[in-house]
Length: 237
Image 1 (cartoon, rainbow, N blue to C red):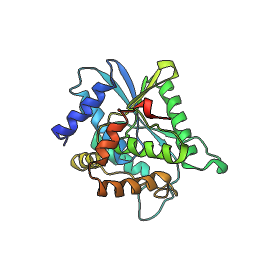
Image 2 (image 1 turned 90 degrees about the horizontal axis):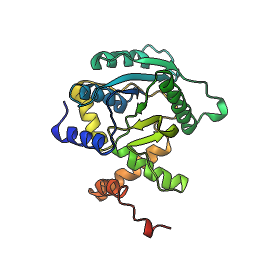
Image 3 (image 1 turned 90 degrees about the vertical axis):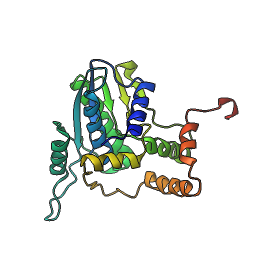
Image 4 (image 1 turned 135 degrees about the horizontal axis):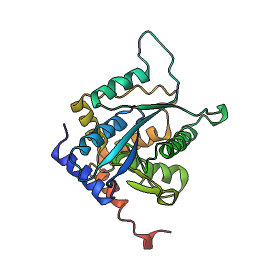
């Protein structure tokens, strides 16, 4: 279910950034997408062999945008099915209200993130795990360069609130295609994304641009990822 090569790189990312420590209480952000489902499965899998002991608190923020149809089960029903496969208990929290004038991907993401921080405090978690992978980190680099005018990305481990809370991304060295393979092998199925903006965002635009680059330059992905660890500040403005 988890190839030796993929398992090694996950372990390398955890080691490089000291993601897990003995006694950690880790809130796992479960959106229902394949990345977060694999993340939760993976962290449970690693619990059995990790040299440290840690506790997991899987949490889902319910955006409540599903409308019942005769053709589709609700995301919460689908999530419950996935949790049975993983063998985890999922805490579901209703999303904070988002005003009409702030209904953008950025505002929605920011609101969910704040709510997760609050939940981490409530559950006494010292870490929050997100399912961002290697492709996400590269895409974020381009998003920030193209739209925000800065060179930055998501980091595998980030300390917040004077070190009281850390965000960790155990899949940081793993590509999306590998995450999909793990999900298929385990039997996990992503929950439908019913957001009206799904498939029409800046991130999707960046993904298409990068796909074209990778077709023309197959080694570009590895080089781009390596460049984020090899910043030559003396040659930057």
